Image 1 (tube, one colour):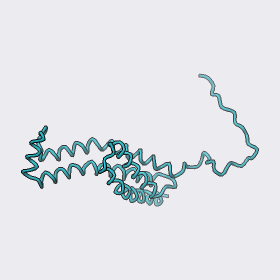
Image 2: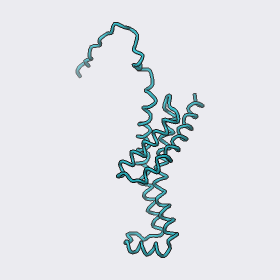
Image 3: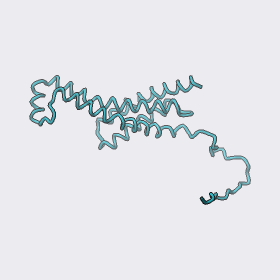
Image 4: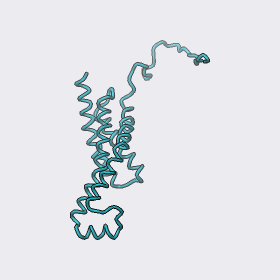
Length: 169
């Protein structure tokens, strides 16, 4: 194996480190936890999405038969509109709940593990997660309605995580 070669280090006239340059022992800035929390939230949602979709299909299967045609669905909706509407609403809320669970978990990690983070960082992480998924889903307008809900949830979860971090210290 060849020996490692290192770049030469140029010494500055001043021996005091610059005030802006972080030392290697310092933690990264707190804002770095915002994209990290977003990444954790997207990963968590990716893990939950398949189960949420399967549950939504099972819920819809209580009213609609498998492989139902548009005419069959229209007939079932006309026969029992309240039941069909309730089941469709419940099936639509399952992936929304999975998304909010994932954003809350990511915001909690930001508040709990991030050195110097506060509830605002978790709130921004949750909002960024929903905006990212809004862009990925083809800019569905209904996804934008979840941004303030996710941000409020992220604020609460990050506050909880920061309180747990403070209690552990």
